[in-house]
Amino acid sequence: MNLHEYQARSLLKQAGIPVPDGEVASTPDQVEAIARQLGVPVVVKAQVHAGGRGKAGGVKLADDPTKAREHGEAILGMAIKGLLVEKVLVVPAAEIASESYLGLILDREQQRPVFMVSAEGGIDIEEVAASTPEKITRLAVDPRYGLLPHQAMSLAFGLYSDFKQVRAAAKIIGQLYDVFMTNGASLVEINPLVTTPSGEVLALDAKMSLDDNILDRRPDLAALRDLSAEDPSEVEARNAGLSFIKLEGNVGCVVNGAGLAMATMDLVKYYGGDPANFLDIGGSSSPEKVINALRIITRDPAVKAILFNIFGGITRTDDVANGIVVATRELQVSLPIVIRLTGTNETEAIRILDGAGMTALSDMDQAVERVVQLAQEAA
Picture 1 (cartoon, rainbow, N blue to C red):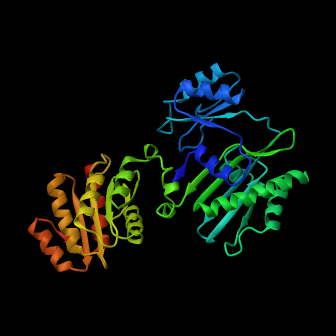
Picture 2 (picture 1 turned 30 degrees about the vertical axis):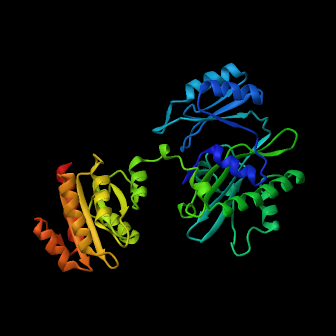
Picture 3 (picture 1 turned 90 degrees about the vertical axis):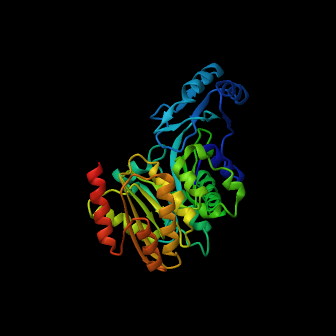
């Protein structure tokens, strides 16, 4: 789950990280009022889950409240990478002497959090990594011991030479690690981490992504989810107990189990197709889940053919078969459907499908090759 900048800044501030004050506005009048309250100059920043806000015109400097209002009018309602701006963050403009990058990401290959710091801040870290990777310092943290003081100091020395600033940065690095671990984050970034002419070290921007698995334990974090910034089909799927991610292809996939779903998408690509989605209906699938899955997939106009790939371990294939029959009748599905079923109650599942005039294959390659062919013919 991605957080807006103002939400991430709040979590950082709660941990003691020096973050300038700021207020959120949803109307131009509010923007002007906040600018008067904070004092000018201020920066008006679009709040959307997308990078490149500045390049898109979503970050503007205002030297008086009236100008702040004008920027608010221009930014509110604009679209950035297809996302509508409904809120802006108004913050005091800071005098900047230097900009650095400070980030912490969960490296699943190393199975531990990894710090990335660079004295080249204020720009996309991807650009730095591609053109001058030697300017990025990385440190993997062993979660059994946490971030040790000497590690934080070592990272800070990679950013500053002034010892006062090194100590301030080391403290922020330790606090950032606490924010990351306490809130079940998969990514936390401060870009830029700045120094001011007076020598202060401040976090001017914040980006944060949370692992969805923590949300059941942290309703306070779950309440920060912005459903308007998410794909409606993904929201509907989550409410129906389905794991769903929309992709750009034309082969709709309904699969049980994340591993099989990934293998199915790989096989679709192998046979020259493009998956339209990742969709895992789970290990114990009721007919209702199948109906919800098919409803979501058939709503996507890009889908030209649908593949059911079900391996019945815990999942009862007859439950899935019943769901397919009911869903196709209820939703009046006109798209071609290829079904591959094998496993628990397979004989009963085949009987159910036969009774509805449907055929189930047992060979996965054969089913995937067939659905890719049908999607290409319908394209």
